Length: 301
Image (cartoon, rainbow, N blue to C red; front, side, top):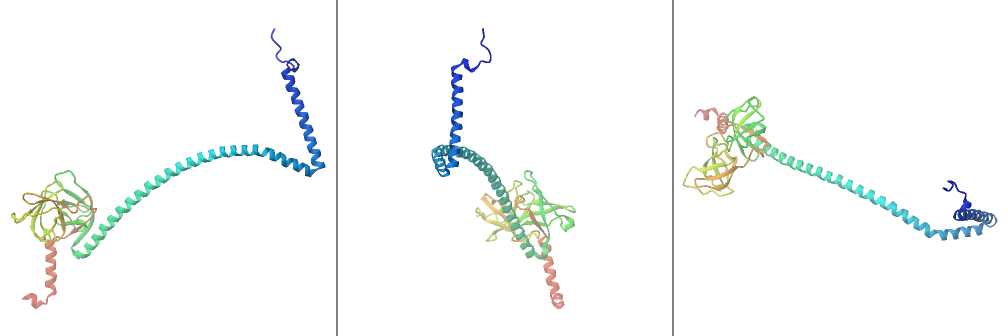
């Protein structure tokens, strides 16, 4: 037969002892509390001494619990600090990347400002020979024809045959115009043949493009072929199209009949360019101005 579901404590000695101990502890606690109450009323000084002694006894335990609590709180703080450091590190990386982008932009602006300053000085030096200043919109990179598009055209005074130069040197000449754009034949084009001289001895030569971004320099006197790497070639002014002394190309290596060179100014590195009047027309204007300044008697002679 199964035992009853709810048994009385009297049927178990362990339950009886537990109940007895509980009663004893409750009665003892009540007695102690009463005694402490009486002491606190009758002798406050003695009760204060008892309270201080109890505090001294329980102080190590309290310190132990306090240390445990601080350790747990420290774990939380360290975890939070680690997470904060990770987020701050990511934010600093983003800031460094943004600063690098700004530095690159600042460098690009410095280069552009330097080119514009040089063009401004050249414009002041050339006086009335400058037709317009514009930007190179695009240029061919892989085609056999080396052509660039300029952002100014016939409405700005640009005409076919006008030379085009950048801050660093010559770019080419205008071969076609529209009201707002112009097509430029670059120095490296195979159909572009330009009279040049070597600096500083003035050795005359002819420069012709090879269609691959390089230029062949052939001396007029075929018996003189002493080109060296790093020598500079400029325009000579012969032919009346390009003004003299415009930086043209740098010698790369000597060849059997001349030298191979690269243009000093390229469309890829020259955003702003200046359109000039042909040199022969400029020279004619200077001569006409000089004749007008002379007395009529001298000009008649």
